[in-house]
Length: 92
Image (cartoon, rainbow, N blue to C red; front, side):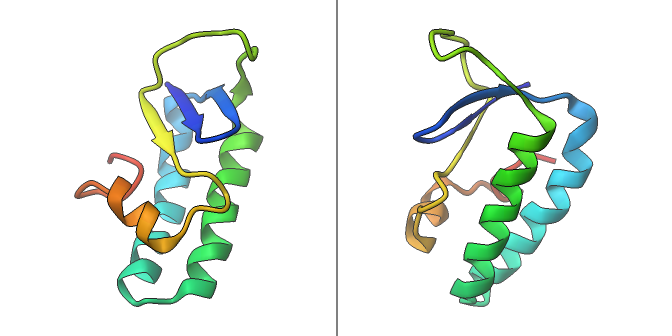
């Protein structure tokens, strides 16, 4: 799957990594619902770091359609809230 981190670029991520990423996504959703902005910020950074670690970066000039778009590391709670679907940021 091609994943875009807003403001950074794209990575190709194997489907096998999504179970691990979904745990962080669930934690992020709980923190958002509970208004835990410090926890939200930490978990968002952990999630993005994990995507960077597990994914293979695409060249900057690659124009692949992104199947998943994640917020930038400095996104606010409200900005992320507008990106959510029923499953959080990551489907599944």
